[in-house]
Image 1: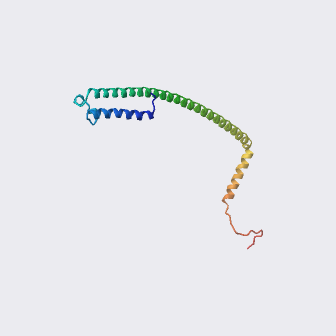
Image 2 (image 1 turned 120 degrees about the vertical axis):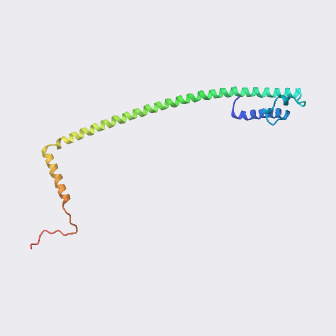
Image 3 (image 1 turned 180 degrees about the vertical axis):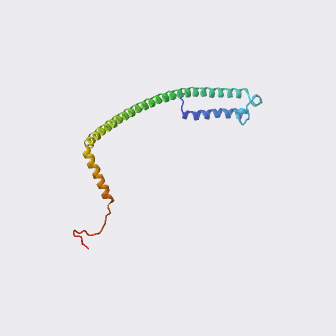
Length: 165
């Protein structure tokens, strides 16, 4: 018997038919209410009891076969899931490895560029650190600050001749 969800519904219907036959025969509303007192009623014949037992035996056999195939299928699915989880873990490990390689490459590039920049700064700073260059830079800076402090007048005409009093 093949296990599938589509096979469960007809099997459940078959079980319900057998339950209905038993409960209808002994005049009970639920299968749990069936007991020896109900089965010993005069209207319950030996032939009826045999039919009930045969129907129940048939349903039990079908149910057992369904359970075995379901267990087998669950085992297969479980093995598939484990295999897929292993693949996912392997892929994650590869991704982490690639990311680590990328980080190391970026780190090496940044270190190299910083060293190059540092070398350029050192080389350009060596010539400017002479006393004469330093003095010139200081004078230029002071003059710029003085100009920044000077008042500015707008919309005033410039003239070369200054009238005397």
